Length: 172
Image 1 (spheres, rainbow, N blue to C red):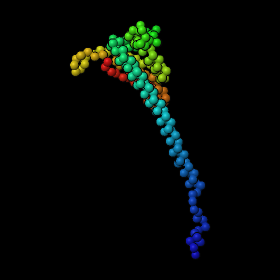
Image 2 (cartoon, rainbow, N blue to C red):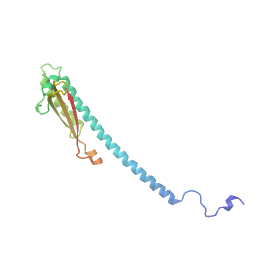
Image 3 (cartoon, rainbow, N blue to C red):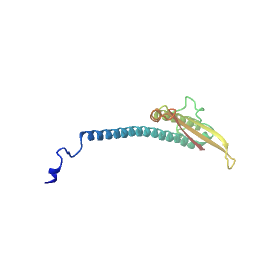
């Protein structure tokens, strides 16, 4: 007698329908978890991109301040000093463009960049004079704060208020 003949007529080889359904259920739960992870990753990526943009824009105004250093040392880039009618087209190479006009133009262009690159983007520049801790010499410190609304990250991660800020500080 062969082994085939000894096998019970009820013995089946392979998977039953119930085993296949359980395997599909486990697989679908895993795929839902991966989908949720991808969605959170995309939102975190958007938030990180906005933080990078804010940092780059903060360095932009600091570079402009370094290029027009005397005006920056005198507080010409402080955002509360800039008037509403600041010149939009003043560049250092234009004859008759004073350093004060250049500072107003730089600050105006920076505020326009913030508003267009970040949702509800805004920024402030504050300069303060203080003594150096080691030498006692007088230093001017510039503090640049860039704020924007990051509602997507707040909704996804529940991380406090939707307004986010990046603060940069340097000695001029």
